[in-house]
Length: 327
Image 1 (cartoon, helix red, strand yellow):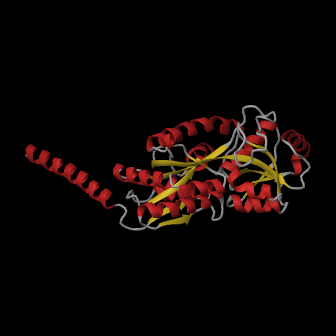
Image 2: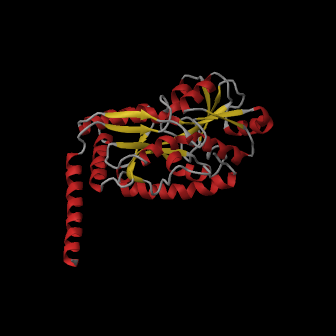
Image 3: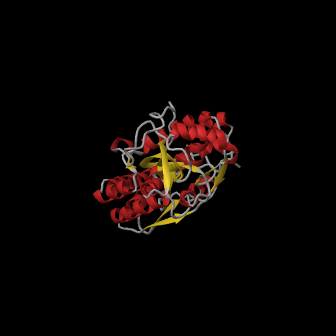
């Protein structure tokens, strides 16, 4: 009886391994879905559509972009965490969805460190402080002085509560010692449009979104909120250069599958993403939207897994210290 039980157990293991290999060998056999957890037309959506087009060519199957906004990107991300782990649905996550939100929200919808299978880091981009074009300040020190004097009547916008653009500006406000009313939007695009229209005073936008408005002089650029200048905005001094030492906010985007996805499928998707990222057409498109393609040594699932753990820890302390919370 014991030998029979051991035989059955062995057959089950062998069958499971064989089934996984067959599944991975056939993958992908049908169209795939890339969930973008933010509003259509925003920077993450734009990046997602560029990536989806290139990935479709590599895989030989359509990659459909599905925008699912809400809860700082957690609604869409959670839909992937709950999806079947068969490799056909994945999310284009970010620093906000897979690090900051774990501390910011009182009841996060998932554990970013354990509920996903990391695949690959795609891109990185810094944030830039931009104001409505008729706001008086022209540099960071002038902005700080103006904000301190007028904070009670000022408003700043973001792509939504819990997004990188929200936390970036909230951290900036705390660093310069002001309290300003936050106006959350359903995406960075609508927030930027209201800034251009003069309905809000400033925002901490992804540089990839803000450059066209800055170049078109429909908004005013004050500072790159990073330790170095942006390649897309070489003439714009960083916050560090303008006296705000040690301050840096940025964003990254990466692909995640549901937890439990067979390692062989994770490997195949990782390899396909790397092929897509290495295509000159992809690199040119990202350059055109002022985003930086991740370095080759930063593209493995293991690197992304460690990055998520580091970023969760890194942002936990400043978010808690700021007193920021979201429901």
